[in-house]
Amino acid sequence: MLEVAEAVESTGPTLFSQPRTTTTMSTLHQRRPAPEAPPAEAAAVSKPSPVEAAINWAYLNLGGEEWDCQPACIITDYILATQCFVFIAYLTFMTSYLNEQSHWYVLYFFAMGTTALVGGFLHHVAFKAKKVFDAEAGAKRVFGVYVTRPTVDTIIDWSWRLVLGFTTLTNFCLVAFAASRYLSDGSSELTIWIAGTGYSIVAIFAFIYMNTSFMLLGFLPAMVFGSVMSVMAYERGVVHELLVLTLKLASGLIQGLAVSPSSKHFNHNALSHVVLSAAAATMLMHFHFVV
Image (cartoon, rainbow, N blue to C red; front, side):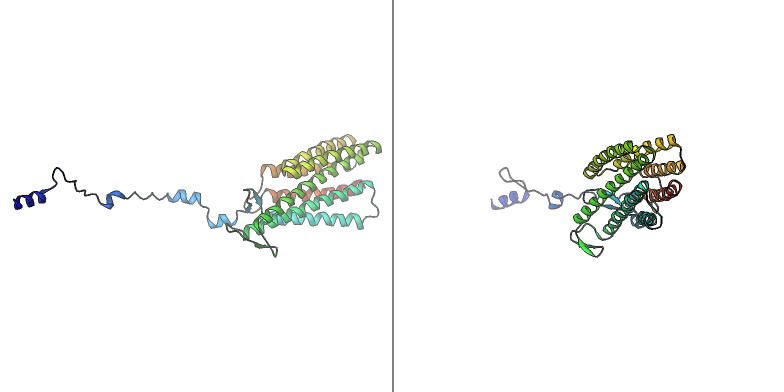
């Protein structure tokens, strides 16, 4: 009987015994197939080359906004600022007299030069920030001063507000110049007061919303009023005055449509500064024709 029991036990499970499992850990943890590597063409498209990354002249702030920091944009802004301040010095110290209209020329060059100077500083700060800031937090050296990334973004934002404000002042000067040149004293003074009030409102909204469209909104009254008055009067220097307005309009269209000879080396902002420089030179020529 002992032999029979041993034989039964050795042959397999009985009715009351539990079945013996043969599942191993390898069956519980099945291997999943490794994800297929993306094609070489897709990887090349998604990841820019080191050369393309080096010439992508845009600083991305913490809010996700891009700020142009192309060297050509910085240089042309500083050149335009220098040109305008040289013109101010010429009008102030090298002319025999300055009448009421001449003061509007000086204020126009001051507003445009300050706009270019602050704009160049803005792009320059963005250029430095793009070079030193990365995903890591902490203060970095920008223009020899240790600042954090939020501080840099605040500097850029306020610089842009100043650019919009002085651009609005430039457009106001064009309206005031045309009014003082072609209207009577009473009508000229009334027009200047109305224009000043309107442009002050535009400047306030530009400070709040920081939208580029306020530049074009401020220029439209100056373009329409100035061109209509100059054509109706058709006095000496009308060609230069219309050319200034045309170049200013072309500058705005170049920025709005992003027209440039090379987006990587000389983008639309840099080209716009060159056109504004031509407009400033034409305005100085206009001064010699009418004053």
